[in-house]
Length: 217
Image (cartoon, rainbow, N blue to C red; front, side, top):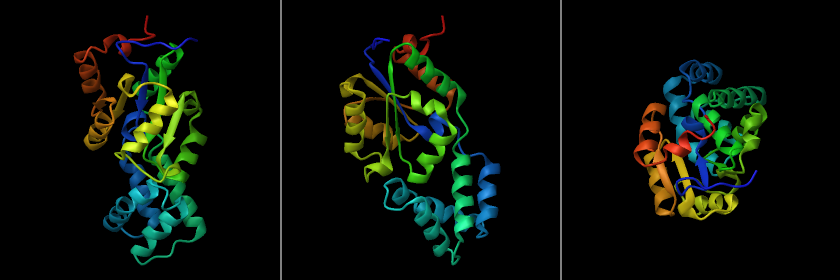
């Protein structure tokens, strides 16, 4: 299918967590608390305190969980680390169905789609193994492969180059304001994703209704 440009947009670039997937369900988080055995407060501190290093590829999935455990005074076994990695992947693997469905319609209609996600190596491998639909994106930029993370300017450039479009023709969607602002500084168009209803309202307000409705008639 030939490539299309609609309302000046040649490609739509998606964040993964909280955009293509839902937020972590509380039940999944509590599963990690139980597996870790270090308590919710210490897990929360370690999980998020070392996440940026994981996303940047400074830590692997194994060394990330070793670090989280060590900080809490616990040495996780290899088996427990494997369980924690699997539970972590599962917590981010719940599709945000309206966005996944829209991404599929865009691709089928000839509009390029891509993923730009701050994500660690084991997370990427696990999510790709679970979701065949990830293969439908024209280009995926997984932060750990490049030693950087959003909102580092160069990471947006890698995505734009991979999509083969001008930055000003790429619409980027992310759930974090700093990442949206980073995209805009890099010359992309960008929208903050909060709820799907609010996202659709903002899309139409900005004149992207045709893009939103693509493939529905």
